[in-house]
Length: 164
Image (tube, rainbow, N blue to C red; front, top):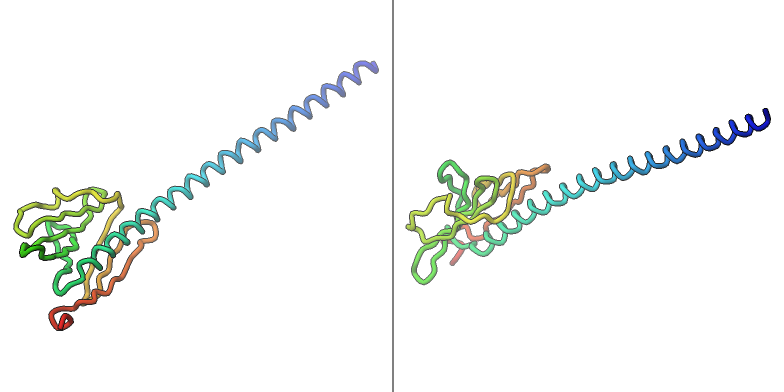
């Protein structure tokens, strides 16, 4: 009888130990799964924020490089909002179009009468969207992401009067 009680006690100790080990393993498993999901969410937010900032910095640098009288305009071409930057190199007029098409920000640099269209532009970076709006000397650039990041640029050269 004493042996049977001792055997039951050993069985209970073994079951309790196994149950405690199972709880520990399940806790570790859930911690790893939750941590992986948190890492994935943080990584996707950082990646999206990075691409939005890259687009805004890229457009800002292009606008600053071409900030001359009547060289920056927002146009609608083929039902797409396009930032048009014009410049003259060795007596030839060139245009740079920056726009959003097919899930990416694109750029097309060509001479003014080439006949190239938006489909001919090069992909710069993947994005969810890019819009431009110009009111007077203020250019608003907005990237469609989770926070709808936007940038306001003051175009310094307002025209011929500013260049004198």
